[in-house]
Length: 109
Image (tube, rainbow, N blue to C red; front, side):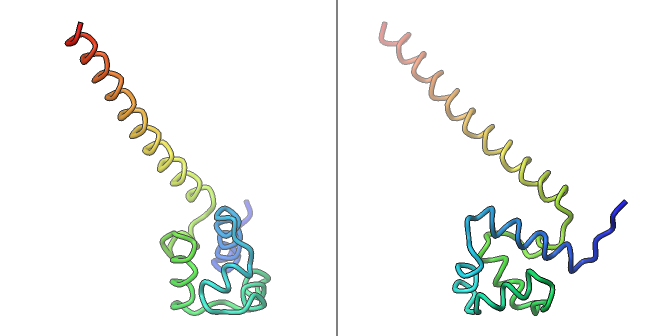
């Protein structure tokens, strides 16, 4: 079993969430007020950001800072759970709308 260090996990998740959001290193750098070289150095393991910068990165990516340190499998499970909830809510509203239309047709018949 391959054990990753916290730094390696952070780097992997940073790249994953940045790409998932469709951001280039430059895009992320501009949002947090840093250079693209700085983001590149973080992703290549040369630098590790301060807690304040980690919070800025997470905010720019639309995630909680802790998600940058969670194993990918757990992150993916969390994302799947969020998607399932979103799908359930959408289906509920569509089913409710269909039922309301059916009752309306019956009432007006």
